[in-house]
Length: 109
Picture 1 (cartoon, rainbow, N blue to C red):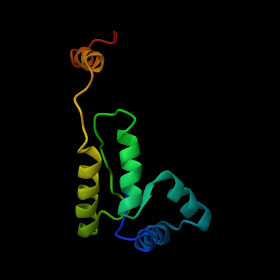
Picture 2 (cartoon, helix red, strand yellow; picture 1 turned 120 degrees about the vertical axis):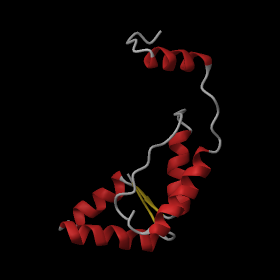
Picture 3 (cartoon, one colour; picture 1 turned 90 degrees about the vertical axis):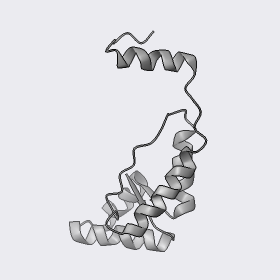
Picture 4 (cartoon, rainbow, N blue to C red; picture 1 turned 135 degrees about the vertical axis):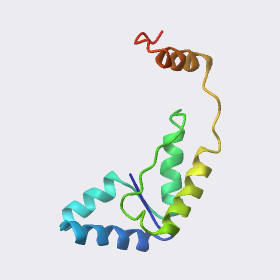
């Protein structure tokens, strides 16, 4: 889950708005900041890029905290596109595993 805003201050304000609506205390807010991919464009971009650098093929992103702000949706779209732009096709071994899984085989290799 992602909570992104143009600045860290706006991201924190968005999170505090969610927290107020849900009745979260300060401890829960701090925990949410640790669990979420949270922050400004640079911070969120670095976290998403770090995920991609592990070798995954793509990202599915949920913007539950502030997705009602249409500008946040566009911002996350730009960040996500940049993070996934360095995509490379899977290695032959990984492709073989993916093909087997698509065919319903539980044996990976």
